[in-house]
Image 1 (cartoon, rainbow, N blue to C red):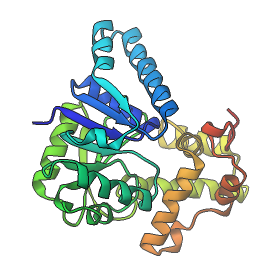
Image 2 (image 1 turned 180 degrees about the horizontal axis):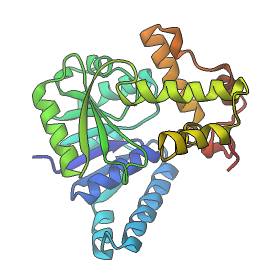
Image 3 (image 1 turned 45 degrees about the vertical axis):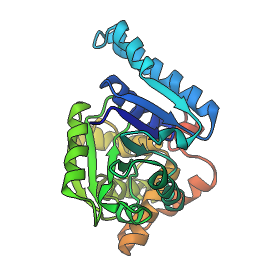
Length: 281
């Protein structure tokens, strides 16, 4: 029976994941190395829940109860008695493998260890543990409280039972689980990132302005947000990291990151989070 859920990483994704589990009546422990990040995450969750209350989709009492189910800590060891753990730390294979090794040592042997990675191999993460059958990918979409898709990634050794339990959790959260195999970028980023990359090439080659390219995709292809606005929202550094994973993992030159993307990241123009990307914020 899953009652206590551990979430590691209090960034945008981690705090969103913690929020949806707390809203679904799970006891949630949010872990981050930096205490200020935990304070910021708590504030962001409170603000997000407040919007639901304003819209009338959540009562004030439910908001308060959700916040009460959420605790924060800077110690990973506080997850020793968790029933399920999701990792949402930096998109770096070395850091994730080290964390999974640690989690494997401190959590109960039957606990499923999930990763919110958008592109790193679940098989590699599973191999860092003694329970690869209980390691899987649970890739939420941003913003987590609003987006219903969860990409479920089955590693080479992930058991059918682990996938069934994790998919059941998604349904409990009101999300739709969709299974993907453990290939670089999975389904979402394998299709999305080349589109974003191609849009950046179109800017670099002067095919159109960012506004023109985004307008064509919105009005012509019915996308709710243009690819360059979306890239700014995701973070250009994150887009570059995922394209590098696709390029390295699949070895196909079609995934080569656009030189303009590399240049913008080098300049610190990362999109919305830095105040400047293809647009100014």
